[in-house]
Image 1 (cartoon, rainbow, N blue to C red):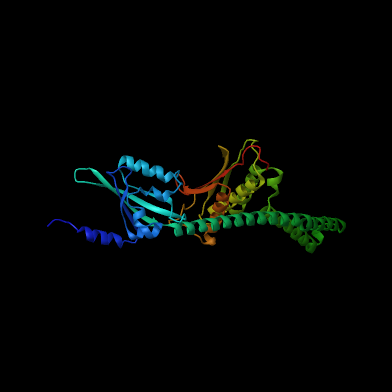
Image 2 (image 1 turned 45 degrees about the vertical axis):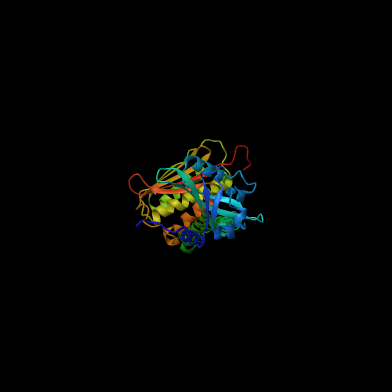
Length: 358
């Protein structure tokens, strides 16, 4: 028995479909519409007699320079199906976003006779996506503002520690030294000698904390020197081999906020390699490539985990913070497996255009 469905059944079935459906006659000039279902009418606000016999471009109003229309024209010329998202307009002029699937219909002999269009109003989904993207931009802006506020607070605390705590401790050391001299030497006064050692230890710890808060070497000698000092400190602290290659040309100048971002990222990545990947050696390379500041941190640790971690104990939040800061300034952070064992983290940050004040 032939596989045929009565025309009335087809019309009734198409009329109950939730998506808009239209059929255009490809054999007539300008391919007029010969069928539209009720969902199409409800979506567009037109009456059936206002659409039948006319081309579907009536929904485009004067918005005829959309990129999606070029895709449709190319598909029509090639007699191929296509799917696009269009800005369409209802009869009352209101905009709606139309997800359109366009399919050609051929006879058994390969003759093109019709096109079937299936439309879905995705305006609500587009607006929701737009609002979400807006909120994400706002959150990123707030995060960037927080980063700047945090950095300013770090610098303020470091200055106060240097000007108040540091100088007070240095004065105590001088006075204790003079007292030791006046009393004939620390060997005769064990308690005094112990006090001198405690003050000296407090001075060293204060300096280390000041460097952690806001390394003065960044301002005094620049990013390469600060990275080399950082490598020496972490090598002593964690007992791992650290190699720093940070030779940079004198120009272009690196903005202060970019230099601090690189420094803190390098510190986070190096500590992660030691504490969470059991690395025995770390290589840090800083370079300039096509007006991008590129930081590569390679270790010989356990390598990337099978599943990404977000637990701060596993360094996940640190990596998340680095990536968010990088993306906010147009940069990227990419993690990949090393050539043998371990992980290679590549941070790329664009430099500002030449002539921009830093």
